Every structure is written in C-alpha cells, then in structure tokens.
Length: 458
Image (cartoon, rainbow, N blue to C red; front, side, top):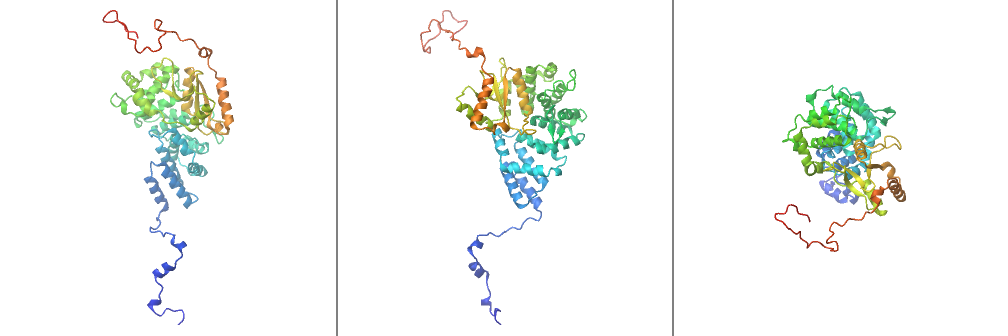
C-alpha cells in the first residue's frame, strides 16, 4: 500500500528528525525538571533561601510577577518584611543604601501591589510591616492608612513587646503625635499615647530590658517627660524597669539599650524637665560612669549611621558650586561646655549657628511634609543649645532646577547671617613678647632658673 512503511529501514528515527530540525528550534532548551506541583509553596521556599539578600528578594519578586498577574498576598507581605529585616537597626547598611533601594522601580511596584490589595491585610501583618517601613526609612501614606486602622482595631490584643515596638516605630516615622496625622480622612493623632497607656495594663514579666528602653526612648523623642502627669511621670518608671537586669558586666553587651539610656540622660540634662532628677536617679551612678567613659569609643561609633545621604550629597555639590566652604558635613553639635557630643547634623555652619537637616519621607498629604520623630527631637535639642535648624524636604528639593537650588541655599543663608561679634576680625595677641620677631620657635627651649621647676611654660 502506498503511504505505509513496509520495512524497518523506512521508519523515521529520532536522529533523522534531529538532523532535519531547524536551527531556530534547536535553540530552545527543553525543561528537564517538571514544574512544581504547588507553585506557591515553591515560591515561599525560594524566598526563604534568600532571607537576607535584598537584591535576590526583588529578583524573585520580578520573576513572580512575570508568571502571574496577582501574586500571593502573604508572599508579598513576607518579601517586604524580609527586605526590612535585612535593613534592621542592627544592620551595617548606610542611609544611602536604603535610599537607593527604595528608589528602584521593583521596590515601588512591590509597594503598589501591597497597597492595591490592602483588603487582604490581617492584624498579624501590621507590626511586621510597620517595622519594615521604619527600618527602610520609607513612609507610604497609602499603605500606612490600613495598617494604622488595624493597630487601632486590635489595640486591646497587642502584647507588651508589640506595643513597645509599635510606639517606637511610629515615633521614628513621625506618626501618632499630637497633630497632622490624617490618613484617608481619619485622624490618628494621639496614637502614641494610647499605645503607652495600654502598656500599664499588660504583664510586666512579658517584656525585656530593650522593650522598656524603647518605651523610654519614645517618651523622650515625643517630649513626653511629664506624661501622664507632671508629678508622676512614666519615663523614670520605664528607665527603672530597663535597669533591673543591667549590670556593669552585661552592659557592654546590651546593644541599643546603652545608647538609648545615655541619650535620654543627655537630653534630660539639656532640656531640664521637671522630672530631671528622677530620670538621673533611675540609672545607677556606676552605670552612668561606664556609659560616659565608653560613649565615643564603643557606643556612638556603632549607633550612628555611617556614610552619606543622597540629598546631603546634592546639597554639598550646590555649596561647592557657590564657593561656600564653611559648611561642615556630618558634624557633631552640642553645648559649649560639653565634654563629648551625642548628636550629629547633616551640614553645620558654625559662624551662623545654623544646622541643615534632611527629610526623605513622603508627605502625609499633598504638599504637607512632616519630619520624623528623631528629626523633631534633634531640632528641639539644637534650638535649646542655641542653634537654628533648617529642614530640606526631598519632595520639594527634587522639583527645583539647578538655579533654583542655588537660590534656595542663598535664601537660607541670607536669613541666618553670622553674628556681629564673629564678623569682626580681632587681632591676635602676641603671647611671646620677647621673641615676637622670631618666626619659627622650634629651636627655643625653656630656661630653668630653679630646680626642680615648679611650673613649665612653653
């Protein structure tokens, strides 16, 4: 019969088909491994393997959104939390690294996916996402609106460590204080005080020393020295609870606690609140002495963010273009009689007593920027020390041209001029009157008329 193969030699073999296959088809690589039976579980396993690598997490997210239009929402929450944990308070990433990550398109798409289906958020997601946003120094008002509502709805169910974390993170984000906290038409002003009030209704044994230190730090940043009452403030109570398990032996291993306690003592000494004595008495003297001696060499160098910031570098370029060389970058600020400083500013103009600070957060509402709690705390202390503070907001600065940025800097410096006493060039008094005509004094030696000399003056 025609069309029917009569012999085995006429049967088409695989080698024959491979030889006749076009080159375009040969470039396709067949899948050796079959696809996983549970695709979502497979994605969670891949996410677990890249726990502390932000770049790999964003790459997984990119591949995930290519495979499906609506990724698993718990997977998105976990990816955002893992990115935030990698930039946590104990990480070594610089502020510029955080700003570079949050400005990428993949990260913005991840935030958009979280906001678009925020109806799938649960109460257990709120503390973890708020901590992740705080660690990344990223404030999304569209995502924070449902998260704050979940915090309010479950206020009675949070444990004491969760309350301390929420109060600390919301303070650093600049949310929950006394004013300008409206999200989606609802005002969340006073949320910090509500969280602190709930602390007194929880079991004290459930918290550790770091939780009490976070609560004390929250009160200090929000200027709640006299909360809830002036004669019975909560701040000394929080510090005393934190100091119960701290000794000279385990103090160097307490991490952020030693930084927080010393900064609270310093701020109380600067602002002189009504409970200043109670705050200082709540920390044993030997602990205060150890903190003071180890502050610069062991504590502050690990607590301050290392490296520069994007907005700070941009302002620095503008200052260099204008020929202004008197600005000091990342300079410490303190009182004249301080033995050691505790706080740093972005740019310092010593002659003008002017500090430039930089705000990277998105505005709470359109054209309504709001600084973070830490920046508000620094501004309050700097004003008490006699310095003026000017905050440069990224949401406004990025919309200016190069000429506009130069005009803005010149306008700021024109409003804060040097004082008259510093403008005058007073002549330097000649200490060495007998040898005033000698230019180099390295060869001179002090003359001793009596021995042993009572006082040597060079």
